[in-house]
Amino acid sequence: MRRLVLLALLVALPGCFYPADRGRALEAKVDRLGADSAQMQAELKEAREQLAATLPKIDEKVAEVTKALDGLDTAARRKDADIGIQLQKTMEDLSQLRGQVETYVHKITELETALGAQDQKLLALQGAAAVKEAEAKKKAEELKRPDNPKDFLALAREKAKAGEVLVARQLFTELMKKWTKDPLVGEAHYGLGETYLSESKCREALFEYGKVVQDHPKTPSAPDAYLRSSECFAQLKMRDESRMALEELVKSYPKSGAAKTAKERIAELDKSKTPPKKGGKK
Image 1 (cartoon, rainbow, N blue to C red):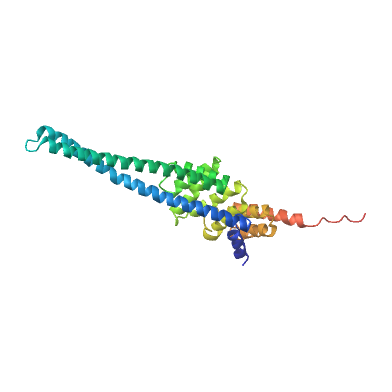
Image 2: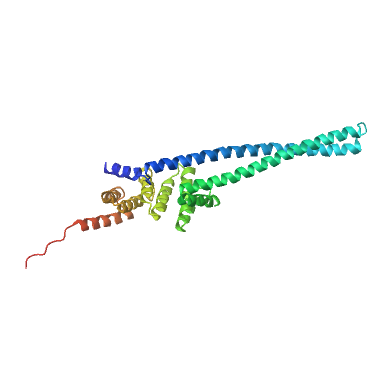
């Protein structure tokens, strides 16, 4: 029962808090910007499709013009006037198609510019953290991706160790989505928790550590996830839960190195609670 209570605490803790009115207003603005962006994306897609459909027609008209020009020299049965009329009509069609292309290109440029500005507004509305996260996502997308979860995890850990926390977070998350059933998903959750803990985001870290001990108890980092959870609870001034995590660690993984550390910390907690002995009478 105690373990279930602990797991519930680990997984259910929310990551952040906003006043209700402010939260609703922010969501409404984000939704409006998102809807506008979606509409512009649809218009941009349509303009690109129209441009793609028009370009082959220009090639056809160019071929017709070339053929008509050749006909001025080689056609023996047709009058020069007839060929001239055909050429003039073809040139007019070509000019009209070029005008359409220019219109589509102009519209595409305008939409791409507007979308870029819209994205910046959306990021600004979401705050500096969202801007940094978007930059990290772009940087992560530029990396060469390993084709197996082991190397993918190694890359994410390497970025985390190098201090590129947001990039590492993108990679850990991507691994979990790409290889949902792989045993290393538990390690990815643990790595994700470590990135949050490095930024003192204990609630977010607790959620990830909770996923490790609940869904991936056999992963190598599961004992450390309990240990880290205890540290997070302590930072949140949740002393009972912090001790509970240590006790559960000792119970579930008694032979682990983390359990040894947990025993030492429990002993320190017990020592701090023991009242000092009074001196005897002389």
